[in-house]
Length: 68
Image (cartoon, rainbow, N blue to C red; front, side, top):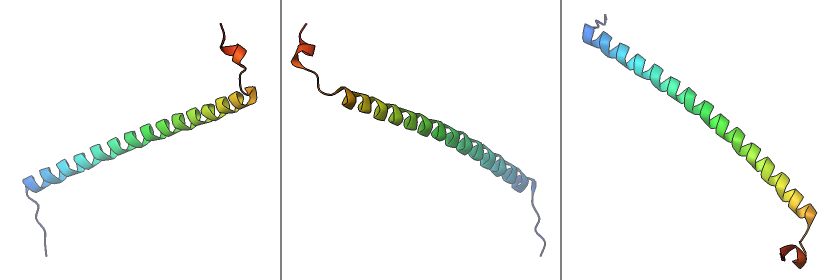
């Protein structure tokens, strides 16, 4: 059995391949952005933990600390 492609079929195949390439690039871009955001999230979580530890180390403030 022989398959014959017309020009319309070739154009459609080319268009679909181009679309697939575009979606692949977008997916890679989004994956890179997600990786960067997760890195920032981890950095902020580490800072939050560090600051919480420092606050615990300071302990409660006396009432004198609130008077001006």
